[in-house]
Image (tube, rainbow, N blue to C red; front, side, top):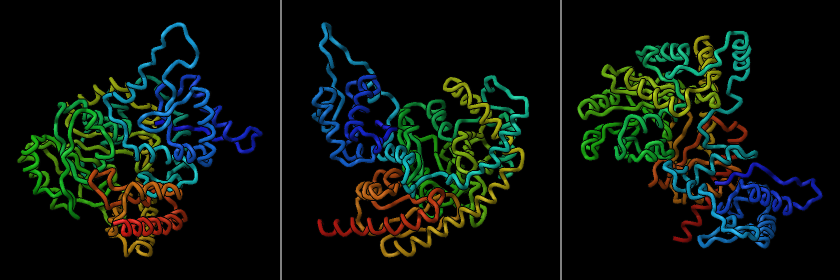
Length: 490
């Protein structure tokens, strides 16, 4: 998916359509957009360049007339595959375009690609984003950390396979506060918890393995396991989390040996598994021979009351691999997460990680170690919980005012998300596109369950109160308009 990072200059004496024509021409002639590259639609390009569609059409018509672009039988416009200049010898196209389609790792879903692209665009209200607003991040403390690190002796060499010892010790102490008993030897530092899932998928399981998970689940929005040749088996949830009575039968039916679960402030539903259900889950896992990946990304982001203890804190068999991260509480850009588990498993994952990237950034690791060991993290969490409470309550109030007759939802006690169920019929893809056209970026429910037709994941962590004030009424109006059209056409 192309993602132009340029916009025409309205103050230039050169007409805008000519600026666009020159920009694309340079991309083609310099090989950045090689033969076979599919251009975004006229509509998408007009949004990316901030111009109307007729301007885009004028630029593309010039390029087509000069032989740089051509129409494609499957629709859309592509860079011409034949030689652009007369040549005495045959020209073979590079392999990259086919390789981009045929590589073993699946591409992101088109909507995810659009979300990733538009999150960097200006003027967009990010109503589904799973990260803290920049105004909630500890910029002052971060600068203090860097100043302190600048006065210390720095390690400029590669890190150890499992990560910086000081950081692993700090993570072990941090986990102990949540009842998780682990030494530094049982900790692997990773570049965000998403990398942990990729390491597990290629290092611990055979191709064709079945992975049990909640449905809906964050796992459906990424391809960590599917790209490794594995299949996801979704299990139903209720308000207490995963329905454990289905676990043994599913494990037997699919010969599954692994369960991925996000039991605390679940992404996307915001639900938290009860203590009774956690005990049932571990009991069922023991009986079925299931190992567990516990995603603890949101555990410490409680708002109303502390959640039940992590599954890992109840595990005395080495059955649970626990993944944690600083991305949701301290800094997404730091790219620091961790896996806690049995030492042999951690050693195996560390060996694979060394083959992938030879270790996470030492600067990030040293920063994270100082952050966790200095007491700043706990103080920051108190602040963040308070601010998240304010934002959650504000979004709930707006939903009550503008969605009460067209949707249902539960009040989450922590994390980032409100999982709203529309009680009117609206095509989610049409809703996504209509909202984006009005500058509102959504996370529709079918990202987390392909069969979902009713839900939206709304986040109170990123958009400001002022942005929510504008976006929620506008979104309500869009839903009502689309629902009316659906009724008239049915």
